[in-house]
Image (cartoon, rainbow, N blue to C red):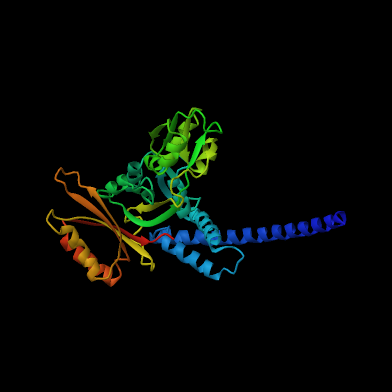
Length: 368
């Protein structure tokens, strides 16, 4: 009986594959039609001098497609597919140069691809300082930098760099980060050094203390750099992504070694205001600013009063030393809402009047 059924199954499978091949050809034809229209859009934008990349437009298209989706594809997969389609079409209009922390295989690279799509022209930098510099100098149109981690908190260097940089924030990406121990040899024996970005070492300190208590923990510029170095010495290991393991030909000795299972890192997308102005309100926005106040009793408390009076929620509050030698601080604040909303505008105006230093870092849609 089983032998008689096999040819029927094969015939049915073959027919379905022919059907899929036919659909693929139709899809290819439609995608190329879309690409031709995108090229015409690019010509108009070039003539008008308008920005080629519009994250609000990307979000609108994806939202419209998801609302029309009847399945069986999941909305999250539909979003990924359309982001790549739009990225490929944008590359025909004008490839976007995006500065990220390198080398290849960093989580910053992954965040950039999630935001811009894989057709973006990534420029790999050795530090977040270099990402800010490349973006401010115009070497890159956009930059992507880590700003905070759900386990270890703020990325202090990124906060400091915002103070004097002319760039502003136009978007964010929240990435689920899974750290893996990577090595030439597929076991934990005789690991002498573990290398990673300081944040990653901190996020994995419990696991490292339990499984590799005698290994030196060596901080490097990025997790991918740690993986690259691990590929040069069998006694070294790196903590990095699966992407980095594939990039440098390393074994994943242990998966997901971060101490907190729900370990997320928030990345910000930065650019010069002339590259892209503040995105319009989306209905789910964040306004980021940095302020300082005179060193007097109750000054920090007074910062909260305009927010309460205008019904504005503060979602984040960080302090950083001003490095003036006077025990002064800058305060980094995230507010729920957009400056175009009357209550947010009123709160910001009142807040500015209380501050010795005041700078809006950007207003942008919140990452889902």
